[in-house]
Length: 375
Image (cartoon, rainbow, N blue to C red; front, side, top):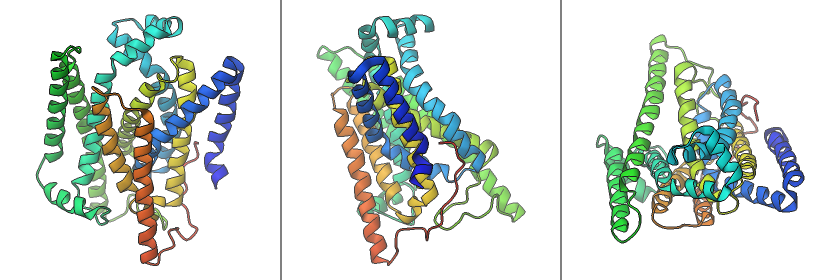
């Protein structure tokens, strides 16, 4: 099971580290290895969120996510994205931006770092919306009931998550403006615009995917036939979203992955400013996140350990706050990674304790859900 799921990740790791050793020697190999570990530690909660959405999709779209999606994640976000940021912020052409990344790495790093406030505001607000919509929704299982019960009641107010996100964004931009009054550069307008863009992206992509998902469910009810075969025990959901619903769900997943990768890309500059080392190291880490996503879906882990999604969403909320704080304050990536891992570990422990109280083994009776092979 482990070899089948993580086989491609193991192979890419060996090839990637070997390539790093040939191109850059032992130092390059060590840097690529460190970047891989950094990416995995920062994005573990991403795998849990991905699994929760991926299990709703049919085999074809699962395969698209695990093939085309990994290309977007590795080459798009880890290699092309930083170059595009430099091209936009420095008002350079694509060729000039690539030349700068190859020939003047210090200047390239400086330009990417200067774009951090906009990147953090976009990703922070997008992730904050994911957390708020989760915490304000009524759920069968409650992990921290003393928080989640009152939040679910408050969530009955329309657009409450949007209002809170806008208030947080305004406070953040005003904080940046206050810092500018004391000598720092004023980036309040940039932060505000980027945050609004993150909010709109969430509302548009999430709203459209949600619309088609609801429409598909309505059609199923009208026809009195399920859209897909019932899921096997341990999945908790039919794996059957297709067509437009699955397409927009796929886009939603890619935007989530992009938002999670922001802190990894920026944090990687603390280790190296070589874009190829960065892409290789972060790409290896991204492969493991995809493989872990498949593992969670195949094992039905989210149904066996019902608080895992809670822990992942709390980690998302923490990451959103950290991203927004990094606009003004420097927070080490190790702290970001440890916070997420700690929250997920706590939710896993709570799930195990719950299963023991109810006499559940915490496994899906040996049955698994097959996910389209692609990783």
